[in-house]
Image (cartoon, rainbow, N blue to C red; front, side):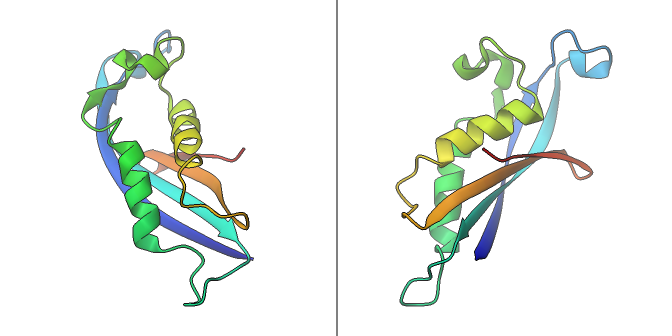
Length: 123
């Protein structure tokens, strides 16, 4: 079994409604996102999935979030845009990309809102 990871980033603001602390106020992050792909079958070149193809697909998803006030996006209309919810939303969008084969799948997405704080979503 092989596991492959690519990283990308986006910048966005948010606030966590009803949070009992500073995060209730509008603030921003330079979000770092890792996409983790798993599979056991390599192609004729010995590659699970091309890093560039995966990163392009991830960046396409992240473009939806980049330089946005996340609370105003339709996908967060009924929920707080926490790191946990953002990780799941990114996973859900990326997992539908046509870059995955029957034996290669998106295993998880990790979202860091700071260099020391992150969350990973696994379905």
